[in-house]
Image (cartoon, rainbow, N blue to C red; front, side, top):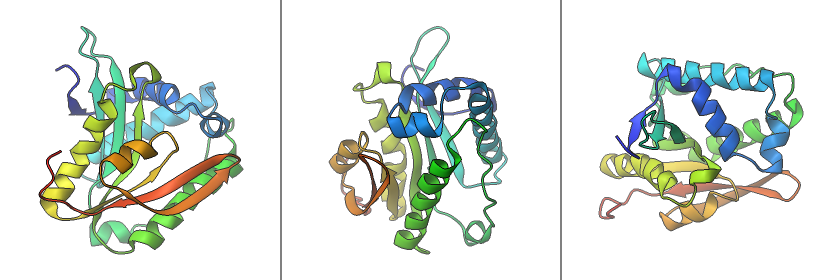
Length: 208
């Protein structure tokens, strides 16, 4: 199907990694994750594991993709959502991430653990959807693909009557403001780069 949101499969991991590189191109992103063989291998393994765990029902994650509608169905955008976490899921111990050798490990720790600390502080035990990552290939931006992936979670959150949480990059912030998110905290992990924690309350009356 052309430009439809679909669940990703483990075999998509390599292509998703290339879309990741083509989506996240700020100085922060390329400092954390340069396009090197070990970083590529790390992301392919990570994404494959996320998808495999989701399909097996071992996690609350779901990784979605949008393809371009061509004969080969190339991936042009993706998102990683987390459904409202079960009590058991909250109790799971998160092991410290081992970053790839070529990454800036100190910056990765500061960025990702800093975001997660704010997530936990702001949302606590409240059930909510969490948009962990949304990327659109730079050649396909401005075509509404990010909106498609965003609406996947917003629609479900409204039906279930729960909030949505995310941490917005400078590039993503305008889209999230457009769809009813409010800013609740800011985080500056890197010079001239502001990450914004945002929450959206459920709105069953809104037509997305």
